[in-house]
Picture 1: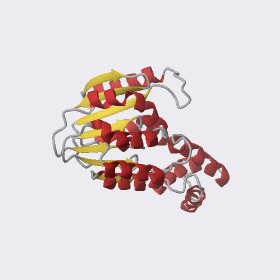
Picture 2: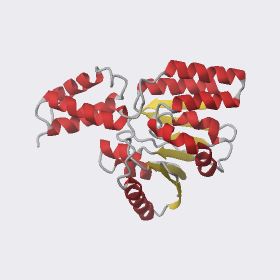
Picture 3: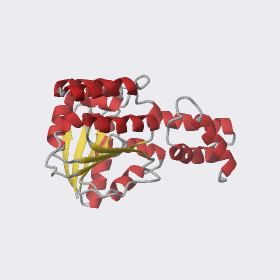
Picture 4: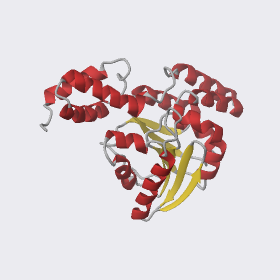
Length: 271
């Protein structure tokens, strides 16, 4: 199979990135997928269609409707200004309902973070990989003072919203547009959150999830997997993901604590 030419790659990247749905997606990610699909499709239009299909699986299928970043930010800012913790949780929760990952976690959010994000010292650094709207769960995390929070995602609109959210909350936080498959983070962190993102990374590149975990400079990781598909079908996903992850953890000699929820399987890893 011949390697795709640079000009053809540029044309596919331009066609995909100029579309309304994917205009804010990381160009690095679009290019990485375009290179793969051009190697498999002779016609440019077929490659463009294949790239869009892959992007839908990776990022386009998770938001429920068009994100209303300005409206969400306004409600959060108002709650912060009023100093109302209940109103702040309500504003964050309203936004989190619009993303399937955080929507599924909301019913278990108190237990999820109460059991799994604990024991952090002041001045700790949290790393959130493929974050989606997960930083909006900070009001439930009960973090110690002076915690810093860095998160990565592939949607520029989401990144802008999260940076504005951190500013409104008075949090030492930073959101960055990054394809962690080709540009994984290496900065040290106290805790890395890798929530329901590994299957998505493996869709971009085979075994990308395992490679990412091995390279993270964090002594603790909170890793989770969905218990069912976006359509709500079980398909044995929980058992498959758990078996693969536990095999990886065993090979790396990580200490693992597993907690199973109705919608999510979580592993607290110490290494």
